[in-house]
Length: 188
Image 1 (spheres, helix red, strand yellow):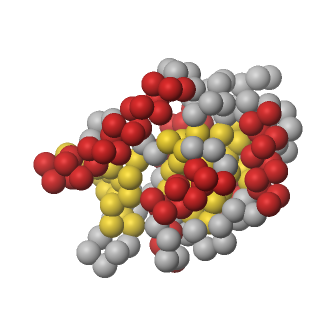
Image 2 (cartoon, rainbow, N blue to C red):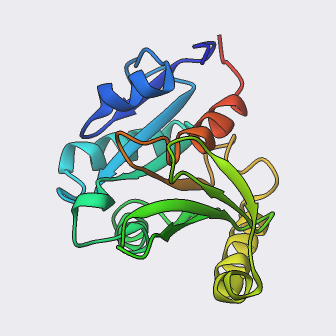
């Protein structure tokens, strides 16, 4: 990924995530985008909350990345609820689907209702079945409401905060992060 914009990556494993995205992390001040990593194991530390508050004051577009859900008791939904209480309400366009053994292996897109399966490490796009569509119906409405409240450019204007999962060691969540990063214009 080209580093045409200045991106700050904050939180546990920030260098690992930046490397996975092909980014060179920059200081938060003056960044075009901030990525905040929230660990399901360690939660949100005070320093990260302070950085979040600074990003809000500066209206820096921000992504909340939920990590380590594959090795914690809390899942993506639990951690987005915690992030929404400790930071600001986050928007979840994608929900995590799990294999029979509980391992996070796929995402369902709440806009297209398509499933992106990462079981083999590379994404495979699939149609969702009626059961999936019914199960995510409430989340679709919630996401659409957040989009309406923040406006079409809410993310770019620093008013809508997408939350995405990231499973280190797999590609789950990385393509979706890259898509969001590509939407942010450079201020340079």
